[in-house]
Image: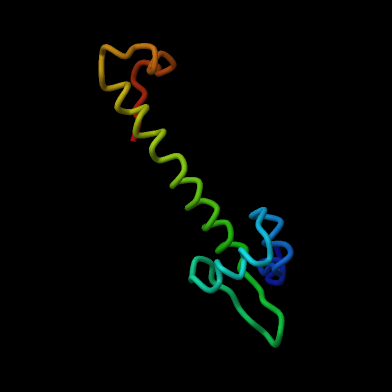
Length: 91
């Protein structure tokens, strides 16, 4: 990837995040997503957008992992943990 490919314009970020122009503006204003403004054009680092997506993923799935770990730690709930192989660990 070339250095220029590491930067995305607003349209590309809107597509990646499936958000509107206004929502992307809110992300900038709130500090959720860092950006660079050159003249009237706004750019985003691909790594920042990917990190934001990863953060959203972690937030949305943390409770699911916690529930699975808790279920696997209770011997009475064998069904919830049936797919766990002997020796597997959950963190």
